Image: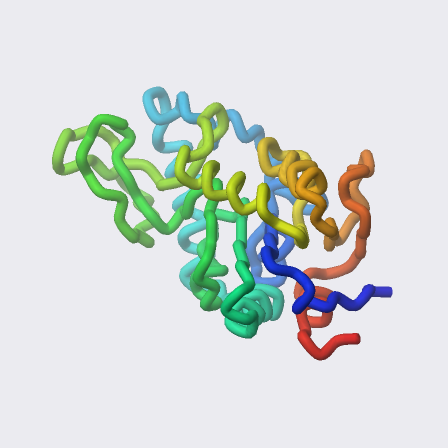
Length: 246
């Protein structure tokens, strides 16, 4: 049974979300039950080296996701988190860190979001020295590889690929939020992808209450999560984040 949370007692709340929160919106997870990586090797479709050797593979995978997202809508979990953020008092800080690249938290109305793996609905140049500003883009590029108009390098989805480091700004913002947090809740994440897998440890070191909401139990169990609740995110999140729930 869910333990009630007296949210007014907490000054700095950090929520981490993973693929499990978007399954009810029709977005397939990469890992775990029904995960895409169970069927294909991510190194063949999502490694940064493919930008030079086979950018078609990257666009084939991420273009397909863009097509899915044209009709995808935030589910009850996304919507509740956005609503919850607006209900906090002015002296409370809320930070939503997401591993997801689907942009559904933005669509739901959340504002203080750190997308540590980027957003597949944005495009940028593969040339790190290029001056092109990343831009919103839903084109799936089925028949061609988009080329930068400034430097003629291939364009790429603005996401973190395998073998790449997290964006410096996003990683710094996440660490800053975790350093100060007193309540940490992870939702729909396998807890195995670094560095996000270490966020709960940072929160625990800061003295935060740590909670995991996931469909499956974490194996092996992470001792830094002091509470674990199993179930669908779209069912548990609206209950847990209801200010009146006791």
